[in-house]
Length: 428
Image 1 (cartoon, rainbow, N blue to C red):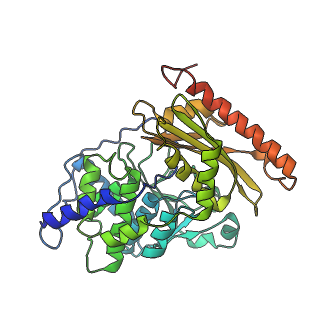
Image 2: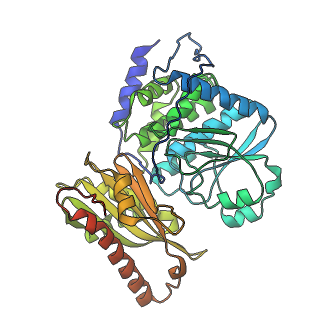
Image 3: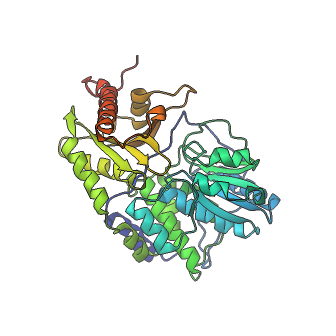
């Protein structure tokens, strides 16, 4: 089984640089999707080694078989894979894996996202692997003939974090597949749904599909090696360098270790921060206030393309001595569309603090009952649309006044939870 070489590569994963946890999606209560009927056997690689997924093996087999049947029913189709506006390594790698699996059924896929790639590791991942993903703005969508697509797919999201979803739905394109590891957010009318909130990364789910035989990875195929490397990066990123990984995540990583390119992964992780990201981190350091081991920092206005500087600043602030939780936020603006939204990130090392509960308690819900944010273990994020107050920043005095109002309001909502000494979460 070549355990020595596999373990050497596996151990090398912990010797890399900072994690790249992106803002998570809004979570609700976990949904139990336990199924029992076994089906596809575990896959056997070229050397005869059999990988058996011990935990939930019947569920994995059944879901793999259901996905296979769905793909068979859509042979020769053309599909859109829609990712969150700011896709992370987990989403990007899984979309690629789905494309490779779908190719076997002559299904042509295009992976799209509406936002941008601003985190240096995401840019490096796409460039160094030639990962097939395209940015489609709402303007781009208007110029596309959507009637040529027979279905769309949601991977590592459930549509709530994509600007493109409503336009695709309005075009009458049916939802065919949903695969995600965030909690179920609404009733999804899709032919195939595999939502497992207890799994730490969607990359783990896709690796299990590979192990179940939906795609046989081949180390001699360059595209397979690069996709395995991307999946390893996605898995590593969403488990905080495997420090929050569970048994099935480790088993998925062990399987991928036979195919991924360790040098390529290291090159992705060594990508340098841009000057603009460093400027945002500097602003966060300058503006932070620290109370009860919480570090809270507003960084003012940020360009749409630099949005990922906010979670990177939170990653940095949480490393300060006597700080267990950092919250960084700013007004992200798109000059072209005059779009503005307050975006924030939370990072914590405090085991008893639930980011999902904290953010939902702090910022609440909109008029339709949708929470402004949520989280998972050690990380969270929030987005608050500015609506009528968006734009109009040509007058610097007005722009400054608008920022001061939002800055004060966010601090007020956070500090009412931070100040209680026993527990930062207090029910009304």
